[in-house]
Amino acid sequence: MKQDLCALLRGNSYPGRGILLGRSADGKKAVIAYFIMGRSENSRNRVFEETEDGIRTRAFDESKMTDPSLIIYHPVRVLESGLTIVTNGDQTDTIRDMMAEGRCYRHALNTRTFEPDGPNWTPRISGVVKPGGSYNLSILKSLDGDESCCCRYFFEYDAPKAGTGHFISTYQGDGSPLPSFQGEPVMVNVDAPDARTLADRLWESLNADNKVSLFVRYIDLAAGTSESVIVNKHGEGK
Image (cartoon, rainbow, N blue to C red; front, side):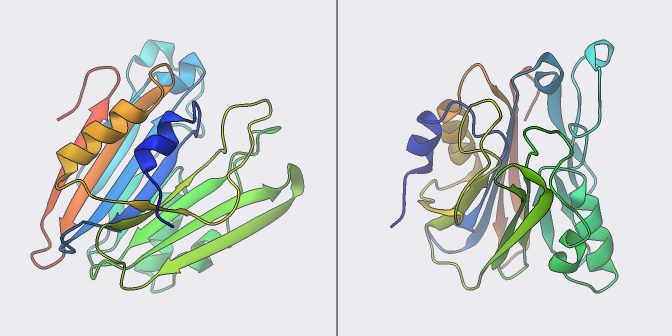
C-alpha cells in the first residue's frame, strides 16, 4: 500500500539522508529527490551546489569545517548514457566509474560497505535511474550493529507505475546509536506536478532543526530534459 511520504517525514525527526525515486503522476517524468540532515555543527555546515554532471556538497563556512570525510561528496552524477546515480556518499563515484567500464551498480557496491562511523555504522544508500525511467535502489548496512558483517540489499523496479515512488533512508529515526533503516524501500505517492512543488512539500515536512539540504529533479522521459530544484537551509539555492 502506498504511503504519504510527507506524513512519514513529519513523524520522523531524524531519517538522516533519504532517497526517493519514482514516476510522476502523468507517467511522463522520472522523479528523483535526495535530502541530507545533520545533528552536529559539522554536518549542518553544508550546502548543495550544481556541478556539470550533477551536484556536490560543500562547506557553507569553510572556517567551521572540522572533518570533511563522509560529508563532502557528489550525491548526484549523470553519465553520458543518460543514467543518473544518486547516493549518500562517495560510492557515487565508485558506481560511476564501474558503470562507465560496462559493469553494473551491483559490482560497484560489492566493493563497498557501510560507513566507518561506529557505533552508528551509517548505511550507504544508492539509487540508479535509467533513461527509460526504471530504477534501482540499494542499501549496505551492518548486521544489527555488528561491524564484522556487511549486509547488501538490492531492489530493482522495472516499468514504474505513474504516481508511485520508493523511498529509502539511512536511519529509522533518532537514537544513540542511530538505528539503521529496516525492510524494503517504502512505496509512496508521487503526485506533485513538478519539481518545485515536490521540493516545497518535502522541505516543509523535514524536521526544522535537523534539515540541511534538498535536491529534486524531474526528468522528461521523452525529451531527456530535466527540471531541478535545490534548497539549502543556509539560504542558497535556486
